[in-house]
Amino acid sequence: MNFLGHLYLAGKDKQIRLGNFIADHIKGIPIERYPPRVAEGIMMHRAIDYFTDSHEAMAECRGYFREGYGKYAGVVLDVALDNLIIRNWSTYSPLPLRPFIYRFYLQMAMQWRWLPPFWRRMLPQLVRDNRIYRYRTVDGICESLDIMARTTSLPDHSPTARRALTEDYQKILPLFHIFMQDIIREMEQEYGISPIGWERVQQEHELA
Image (cartoon, rainbow, N blue to C red):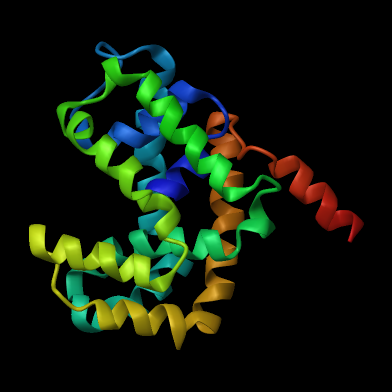
């Protein structure tokens, strides 16, 4: 999963959110270096990544990104999941998306002291570009993939991602919903953490 996926699953605790946000840039066991809830967020991030990589529905989804991306299909799918979450936001959250994202930016800025060097450099740019909100469009996803292709070893083949998120969207969508239900349940069981407003969403669906 990418930024929004981890933020969504991390629930409402700002320190657990922080841990989920910085985890990719933290090596080893974080317990001795961070407050307990930040460390828990880091470990939760790793559990989310493992669950995502191991899930059968995600393995099938990766197939739609394989052409053009090969072994990097999982990396591209992680980014694309933020687009899928936003396009189906009302299914998973009762909260307006923009304030949800802006609150996250503010929470990360207020915990500046715990940010690793990478995010001290990059958080201002993430906020300035409102990168997470731009994932709501396929163009926004492809723009990020193009940047990654210029700065990392990711192949430069965003048309594959565009096709998957447009022409293949209806095939990917049911797999996405299966995965989301499963990972929400898994995080509830393992960490006792639910997405903000998840109980309300479930109640509304039961009444519908």
